[in-house]
Length: 277
Length: 309
Image 1 (cartoon, rainbow over the protein chains, first blue to last red):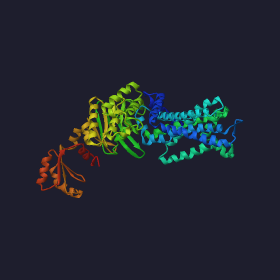
Image 2: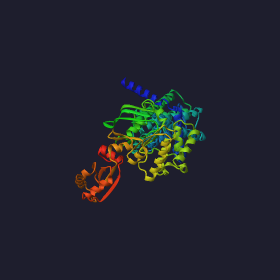
Image 3: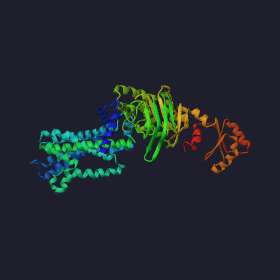
């Protein structure tokens, strides 16, 4: 109860701090996204390479190895292997997109670039910073996913109109990964700590039903995998791309949104602690 | 009063950075916090900039409580932090433009102000350069220009010229003089005496989190030092023991004698006369210098230490 009261008091104080700010929350978010777009104008090759990685996997594993594999059953229907792998890669591209700006780049802005110190000297608040940076992360994930979807359509790997919703679903993946990764990044002390991120994301990329169904795992491991955010994203997008949407899809949506919002709140609190001491 | 503080305190864990200070800054004044590193100047500035909640006491900026209305306060002040926090991924012009937009200012208005400010800090030709390609002095000027984008009522400058070469310092001072003439309230911290004397109408001397003296530069010099100072150096190495011995011999010749590791300071109202008396006493210092007393001497008197080690 005391904890709850303290939390409420904290939120009240935070709202009050916003009083009389000439910048609305929506406008602040837009400004931060716009600032990141300006910064990337000079670095567009970096932007493109992040997109290409899952595309290469799609060609090498999905199409190349796919020639040797018959396919898997999804929602009672057998889909060709490339069509099975493609949604997984789309989810992975959204994860990748969100990852860059919520880990390395976020760390640099926070610890070295002093970018957020600069923003906090203006009417912008820590919540504005957290929300703006997260929005940019998920937008970057969304752009990758949308481009990937076009590749899938061009290769005739999409069998349902539900696939249109794969882009907003990819935004949810961006939200979840962006939120969690930014939150973890606020605790990191050096670049070496980012090895842990790689340690978590590489297995997720390889085993989250991206290249083969989780039925290949023993029961206990299957449960572990099914709880990871990338798995939820992969199955959600696969359900959309193959038109097998169900209640499980809704559960995935809720799961991803909750992860993202929890991350956002943690980031805001950590920024208060680190920058407004 | 634009800034009003009573019993203002700031602690970090066990460390007391600011131990209860009273400050009042009226509109249009150039106010200085003077003190060595670790005196509590920057902690005070961060509290005034509404980015660090006070641990105790009252603080009002433009009549508002920073704990309750930090965004509203920040909208009306300009901050030039100790370390340049420029956006290294943006050009010089975009640094100002984007920053101005953070204040919610309309695009057209910001664009006009950016051109005006680039001219003011003489960076017009560098408008499209990246920040990384600027010299230290240019970065400082850009930071100052940036802090002016919202036409602030109070401009906070934390060590505005630390790390700059003498020429760059003078350019910065000149710009700050102009702002002062325009009626902008300046609040600055410095450990440079000449800077404080040149820019500040009124200042407080801080030491270990306390304010140990307050007044105009001239008042402080009058109250805590004599008009002139004769500096004497003995021997090539300048051993302190040797200086201590000499200090006893010259004690009667000046109002006060300070022994520093490398020199002796003799405080009197007529430095040349004091120097003549030193020579008359049969002492032969290797080098001598007679100068006017400065805030450095005030600080030495008040804290027993020099400002810049």
